[in-house]
Image 1: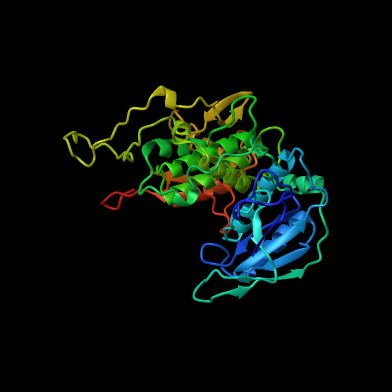
Image 2 (image 1 turned 90 degrees about the horizontal axis):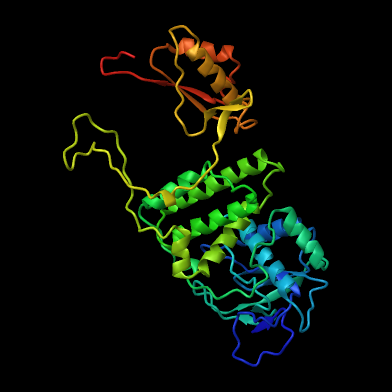
Length: 428
């Protein structure tokens, strides 16, 4: 048996588990199934409830045990809207859904999407006839918890505190999913266009006047479009998510107004991007990826001298890239001095001078400051790892030189590593 938790009008059509636009927000709720691919154990489900309670500042008022998981309820004190504008409530519920997804994801769990208004849920005191592992029907039970009702303004404040903000379209009556994420497939290898797109994110930045959070959301939409189109491998998708999280952290810490990323800001943007992508037409998804043809993976190898015959494995592979696919990005300076950029990120820098003029000393000094986060530039305050490739100096000289410039030589933080180059005869 099912009950609508927020409907204000009788249901005359066939009973479904989906809500209707003529609904209100009475409780916030979550559907925490205990099953493979969901919550691994009932303890994980309870931990998710605890995490959500800590964010909201109150426990649920009631928890229903469906027989296969938990349904916690946080009542909303002022969510009753009769024949009025439900857009604010709709946006709040969608933001709540992104928070639940993010909190569960932090515990390696997934949740069911019950974040539309008036979702139908199971009634305590009845039986759950869904058979799992041959268990048969199970009782649906409920018990009171210690929580108190929350005002909508308070819920909005709690969501904002952890970075789950209102996104464009949250108040709209969304179209149905065109392509559910569960039906998307992974590529065996990431296509060349998407690989270049993801690589560019490491140094990308919002256009002048654009916000950093909207930039993150736009890239999360593009990332999920790549998944929906089958253009990205699963491992590369995860790496791309990490790249976006790291780059977003650099942007909010390094540009005004400076701040830290909020706790669930990145995960919330990802969930919003996935939802947006699922509702897009095929044409709109293709447009997010530049309308590109599904290019094969690019394998660029070192060119062998004289190796220009067809099929030579050392022949360089060349791909033509239209200028329209190359994004305009402002230069980022690793080192700035006297008001000018001196060393640009992503560009090979050469030190030229006479023997014993201090080229190696200068390089060690700059990289030491980079390893400690002291170099004046885009990585100021962000220690970086350094690889020192020595073709002529012995290990003792390299180590002594870095110690003299103040590099952190502790074994717990080996930010400087020496790379030995030897030839077949054992020479350096």
